[in-house]
Each structure stands twice: as structure tokens, then as C-alpha cells.
Amino acid sequence: MQKAILSRELSLLFLAPALVFIALFLLYPFFSIIQMSFTNQTLVGANAINPQNVGFQNYVELFNTKDWMRQGEMGHSLWLTVQFVIGSALIGQAMLGLGIATAFNNRKGLLREIVFTLAIAAWIIPDVVVAFAWFAYLDPEGTLNMMLQAIGIQPLDWLFDYPMFSIILFNTWRGTAFSMLLFSSALASIPPSYMETADVIGASPWQKFRDILLPLLRRYIATDLILITLWTFNTFTPFLLTGGGPINRTNVISIYTYSVGLRFFEFGKASAIAVVVMLINLVLASIYLFVSRNQQGKTA
Amino acid sequence: MALLGAGHHVYDFDEAKWIVSSPAILETLELFKTIYIDEGLGEVRWQLVQNGRDLSFEAFSKGEVAMLVEGDYFWRGPIAPETGNYAMANRNEVVNFAMMPAKEPGSGYRGQDFVSASGGTGYVLNPNTAHPDLAWQLLTYMFSKDSVDALQVLQPRIRARTDVSVPNDEVMTRIASEVLPLSTIRPQLPEYNQVSAQIQLMTERIVSGEMTPMEAMEAYDAAVTEIVGEDNVIRIPLD
Image 1: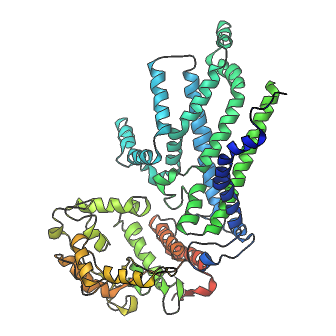
Image 2: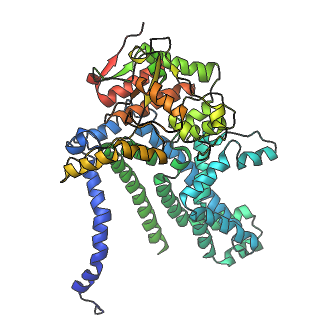
Image 3: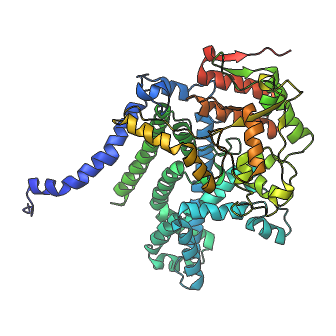
């Protein structure tokens, strides 16, 4: 065995600052949220000074089957979140990202640079700036409607009549760059000879995509889907566009948590929601780890 | 405020209970339905989108809306001739306030002919302070007539002191002297934020046409009872 350069004590010493930070900013909030979720802690009122231990009451309220699909309740919010994740992450970002990556596979030129630059720009601009731009874009007299009118389509009140569709469109635009980059580097790793051979035997573009690219991309697709599902599940940016409305129609889980915790100041209940969200994320992350380990086993 | 005009507050300060169901609430919701659904007199969109209030300010400042239900903030803030976001250079000539009438004379909150609702700022001494006397002296100085008069030059507002007037502004002075005595406040209670969200939801359900006034009031009753508890609500029987 190779001799270690640093002694165990010394290496722990070097690690200590990082461990302290992790304990302070990751582990402590993690456990304090779990602990708080079993209390009726609030910001104001009697329970602010003397929070009581209420056991599972917050959880029972969240999963109260009678009301839970009511507007502005947990079940309703989770259902909206599912729509949002399927629409913007799985269909929007992943499909569009895969489409762009495939279209520009093994190509160079100005068009590719422009498309990639625009997609990445959409990904890295700060949230508030982006929200402001989209607010103007989706306005009844905004850019999108101007363009639609130019081709003879009646203007629509996007954020008012189609709020869920609007935030799905927005989030697709916002996050496609990640899938695009992931897929395009995955595609770059596929030997060009595969495609050239297919060309020689006269395969159509669809056949090449289905029989060569898709099987080789499979594990990247799994990675991509899980990661963007996790991110989309937790994103808060739609709040800047709709505030969760009109009438709770875009009240996705992150906005729901925010309104319980920071609008109604019910820290106990909001912590319980956070724990539930954390568990859902944990399940998603486990699927991700499971799938990626399985793939490793196969390729090895 | 429409509810105050129909006869009572959302909260009964004498009984210390929330009024969750009553003929006045139903009448108020019927009024909203008349305005927004049946007769289309108001813009539904502004009641439901994020920036609705700003849009209403903008339309008013362009002369596209005849009447808004607003208070002194509207006058000294958004449409102020030089400083407002929706500045109206001719504000003093073309804009004026009318008091909010009760449904019938004498049938408003506390038997009033006209009604109003107000907010504001408060200062409290931190009960844990080591220097309560010093803090008290500071607040006494900050809210002396001289200090507030000096502040009025920078930020003309309706102040808590009755001996401080709003300089050079007839409209603000009139609001302070005629409307303020009729005004009331929101209940300063921990549950208010949640109840307020339910009030908002109840109106949105009417304005959007999602529910009838009766359904919306029943949903409000159920939600508020859940928030404050059955012991803290009053239901005034419908006729």
C-alpha cells in the first residue's frame, strides 16, 4: 500500500473547516426542520414564544384526505407540481435539449454557436431579470402576442388564462441548456464511424436516431431526467411570474411551502411540508443512484 | 370596505370573534358579482393577476378608468404629480375623493353613513431592552410636534398626532379631518394574515365566476373556522 502523504490527524485538521460549514449550514438546518415539523411553532402569537410539541398533527393536517385536493392545499399543490414537472422538465427541457443536441451533432458553424449561446444565456441570466423580461413577453400587449398577431393569431392573455402553460413554457426556455449540453457531450463521445456505417447501408435519420443514438444515450437520458426533475420540483422562479395565482392555479409545491411558512408564518406546518418534499426528493435521488449504478454494472 | 358599508367588520371587536357568515357578507359578494360578472363594470383581470393594482393605477392615470377605491396612498404615491410612478401632472385639477357610502345612510359599520379602513405604522419598546428610559426619551423626541412637523416637510402623511396637519394639501387635510374619524383598522391578531388570504380568495372566487356568492361564503366559513377554531367564530343567520 502506498504511504499516505498526510497523517490521519493532519488530514482531519485540513478537512475541519469544511466539515464545520457542512454541519452548520446543512446538517443543523436539516435536523432543526425535522424537529420543528413536530411543533406548532409560529412567528407571531402565543406559539412563537412557547411552541408546543404536537407530534404528527402537522402531517395529519397535510394529508387530511377530506380537504387535501382543495385549492391551496397540499394535494392540489402536488398535482400542479406533477403537471409542471412533466410539462416543463420531462417533455419541455429534455425533449428540446435532446432535439437541439441531435440536430447539431457533429456539425460546426455559426447557427450552432448562435443556438447554443442563446440557450446558455437563458440558463445563466439572474432570475429577477428573466422574470421581468417574461412578464413583458407574456403581457396581453407583449412581444409574444405581437408575433402571434403578425401571423394572424388572436392575442391571448397568457398569464391570466393559461397560467400553468405559461410557467411550463417559461421553465422550458429557462432550463433547456442543461439537457442540451449534457446530450451534446454524450453524443460527441459516440464514434462517428457508427453513423457513417449506417449511412453506407442507407439508414434513414429516424432509424439512425432510434437504433444507434437512443440506445447509446440511454443512461445519459436517465441522469438528465432525474436531475432536471429534482430541480424543477424545487424551483421557485414561477412565483416571480404568477405569485402562485390566479386563484392558486400555479401554486406549485415550492410556492405552497413559501406561503405557509413566510406569508402565514406557520413555521411548524411549513417545516412538515419541507420534510415531505425532502422525502419525495430523496426517493427521486435514490432512483437516480439506483439507475446510474445499474448502468455502471452493465457497461463494466 | 364594501363589507363595512353593508354593516359590519370581518371581526367583532367586542365579542373578540370572527364573523364568518352573515347577510352582510353575502350582500358584499353579491355586489362584487354585480360589478364584475353581471354588469362588467370592473376589470376582472386586475383583481386576479400579480400586478393588477399597478395596472389599475396606470389606466387611471391615462384617463381610462373613471373611479378606483383607493386611499390617501394613491394620492400622495402613484399619481403624485412629480414623484409618482404614474404621475398625473394635472392631478390637483382632475382627481378628487368621494367618501365611501354605506349601503343606506346609517346602515354602515357602527351605524355610520360613510365607512373607511386604515393601516399604518407603530413603534414599540422592546420589552427586553436594558434602557427603557432612554428608548422612551427617543420615541418622545421622535414624535414631538416639532419633529413630526419637520418630517411632514420631507414626507407629508396623515400622522398619528391630531395637532400636526398635512401642509399645503387640501385633499390630504380633508381625508385626515373628515374620513379618519370614521375609519377602522384590521384586527391586529396573529391569525389575521391567514384570514386575510381567505378574504382575498373569497373575492377572487366571485370575480372569476368560479363560485356563487353563497358557495364562496360557505367555503370562507369552513376555512376561517379551521384557522381560528369553532369557539372564535360568529355566524349571523341569513334571513
